[in-house]
Image (tube, rainbow, N blue to C red):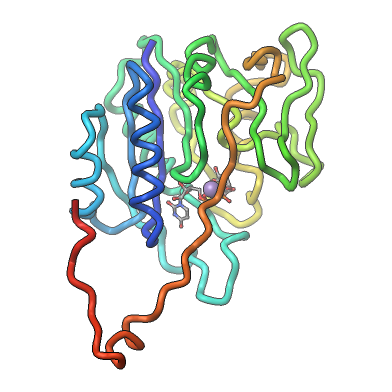
Length: 252
Ligand code: UGA
Ligand code: MN
C-alpha cells in the first residue's frame, strides 16, 4: 500500500539541512510518494536540485503564503498559518492525480520533525484513520491518545484542552479514499483555527469512535515534533562592511 506524504516547506537557512535529514529518512521507506510543497511564488532551483539528488519518487509543487498572513519581524509565528496553503495544494494534487479507488494512505509530514522508520509501518496498517503518540509536543514529552482495546478513550494532553482531537498533525494518517470523498475539504487559514487544523480535518472525515489506535495501542513514540533552532547569522550588510561576501555555494 502506497503512502502519499505531504510536506509543506518554508524558506529559511535551516531548510536544506532539515530536508536532507528527512529525505535520508525516506530512503528507509519503500512505496512512498513525496509531495513537497514549497512556500514560494515559484519553485526554487536549490530545492529542486536537493530533491533530484535523492532517488525518491516526488513531486515538487509551490504556493506562497500571502504576505498579509506572514508574521512581521517582531511577531511570533504562533498565530499565523504554518504550511496551511501548502497542505491544501497537496490535497488538491491528490484529488486530481490519484484514483479514488486506490488503496493508499495520506500523511502530513512537516519538514522539521523526526520520523522513525517504524512509523511508516504503522501508517500502512490504517484502514480509515489511524492515530498514535507524538513526542515533544504541546509542552509535554508526548501527547497521545489513551486507548482501550484499540479505540480512543481520551487524550493525554496539556495545551488547548478544548481540542476534540488532541493530536498534532504528525499523529495521524488518513486513507486516500476519504480525501477524495470529502472532495471540497481544505484547511482553514484563519487565525481562529490555530491548533485546530488537526481537529478540523479529523472532525470532517471521521469520528472519535472510528479512530484506529496504532503504535502498540498508542504506547510507542515513533515521531517527534522536533524544531531546529534557527542559527544566528551575521547580516549581509555587516559582512559587506567587513569587506566580505558569500559565494553561491549552497546549490548542490
Ligand atoms: C505545528 C504542527 O506540527 C503543524 O503541523 C501545524 O501546521 C502547525 O503547528 C500549525 O498549527 O500551524 P510547528 O512546528 O509549530 O507546527 O510549525 P512549523 O514547523 O514552523 O511549520 C509546519 C510546516 O509548515 C513546516 O514543514 C514548515 O516548513 C511549513 N511552513 C511553515 C510553511 O510552509 N510556511 C510557513 O509560513 C510556515
Ligand atoms: Mn515544526
